[in-house]
Figure 1 (spheres, rainbow, N blue to C red):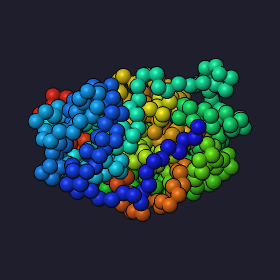
Figure 2: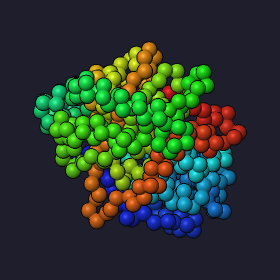
Figure 3: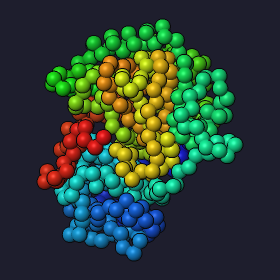
Figure 4: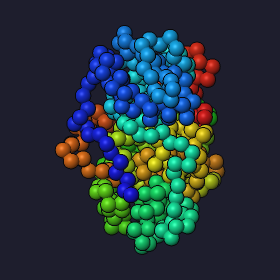
Length: 415
Ligand SMILES: [Fe+2]
């Protein structure tokens, strides 16, 4: 088992117009994966999905256990209005239902945005042939056939094959005492310095609001370029070996973000709720990359910590939020200063908010090399701008929801 699950190449992405989407792509997908997607949609209990794109419309629903495509939206339980470019990205997994909402590219005209986001796993079954996760699909086993200890903490000198097996099965890893306290002090000072320098519109920071209405910088983007300390630690053999952990050819992405987790944040992307890092889309182009959290300060139940759902990277389940029916159980990873956490991009994870004292953490990733014949994405400036623009994504998700829905999306709801 390895963690490179990619099935699509960037070079195959092309713009699809409404005619091609409704006359070819949708009917072809229903013909090919209608049974798989219909089983998933029925398992998830999804309402019929209406799509309205540039004057064309159709509804996906389940009939006789198969997904069916009907013209018009008269029978839809949830209706999404979107442009052909957005629908084109959706069917090619270049953007997810949530990704479109976060970027103001969809408007829910009937039903609730929760149903729209709930359709994501069934759409991946329809367009990518990924079976929707069902109870009992994901199991764990130790090398001796016994139960895998999901609470295991590793040291950097432990057996690498055992670590690789743990990551492949559980989707995360906790490494104890990778860095020294003095090194973490230096890294923390760099975070503080750049947080102090940040301004709301600098395009290089994320901002959040606390219970007193005070807005503050909580995340330094492009921190790898700003912190010589981080660059040195990432290149250090104590950390760099993670690239070879699963044998998939990961390499450090030359990026990193410095985070502070203040107390009492009520709005903004500080203590992120359950999500996968592919939750905005592109799972089939990039998963799994490995995100490492360097614990600059310790993270425990008082200062907030990383929560993970072991095995969720192997489950085609909601990638933005936690499906209450998901049969996999969350864990809290309490770390000490200098510990490193590693999680797969499609492992469900969250940040528990600090209750007693703030904390600092740095996230940096190891990405997969381009697939054979493919190239990386060629728009780094656009990607930087898109990353910065996520600072107020919650407002755009709220705006995307149906104005008349009784369960309208609100920041911090649904934890
Ligand atoms: Fe994340």
